[in-house]
Length: 344
Image 1 (cartoon, one colour):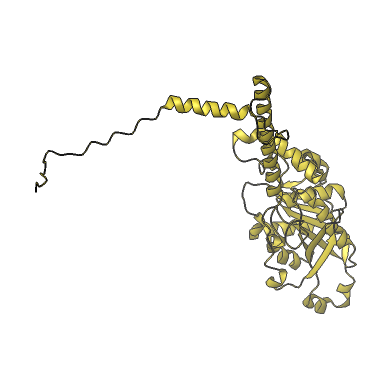
Image 2 (cartoon, rainbow, N blue to C red):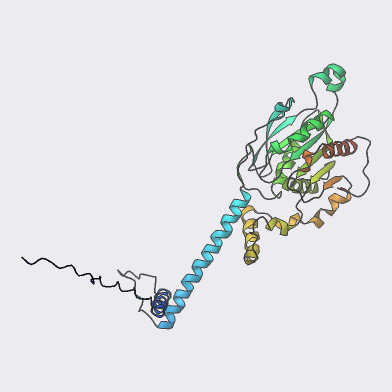
């Protein structure tokens, strides 16, 4: 038997290298597929299969371009509508703390705004057991000043709780509101103070119906978009005695900055955002311009805090003391404000 002979020179055939991609061929294929997609007639016309060879070449290209442009417009419209909906419906914040957690008695209240939106709030009366025992029947016939507190966009009544005890200790009735779409109030879109002003006015009117509140000595304190609502409410109700405003947004362009992402490439969408916002909520963003509130400022009954900080100034003890002193002066029966507003 012949045995196999081992060949020490044996080596397997070398593996042939993979052929290089022909980029020119791939480019031509991509161009042909793009051209076919643009020139395709997407309307089936009751046939089983789409046909790309109907009509002239120019007609097919024209229809394909129109279809794609219509799709782009649809995407832009959906983007604008979604952005407006997200911006005006921030995450729902449920109030976790109440004045009772600060050792203060309060009464939950419900009211309806002008457009029949249900608004919830907490009312802290000026009377307590100690004051009744000290002044007895005399205090029961007394009428007290009152203050309405309005929170910022996406906040709740809990945001304004640091002011409740100082104002209560100063002898004022305090009403803390949950503006529409926030806290326990009815769900709805938030409009940077434009529709929220109706909620603030509903709170003012509710206070005036209380027998122990002086209807001519009611003030409003607002922060952020709540300050916008306070300004608009004072514009509609000149009888409001005083305003304390923390960072009001009185520039429609700054409001639009909350809609438009910080990209110069998307700034062209700003008119679409503004139009969609105004149509959706039946408001006019130009009503927030600072010059439209000149009559309110000229009455000398407003204290305005203007700064670039992101948190409320009402968390500072010194600021709260300034606010209380300002309101005590303006809500005094014998006080007559001078012309001109205060700005800090």
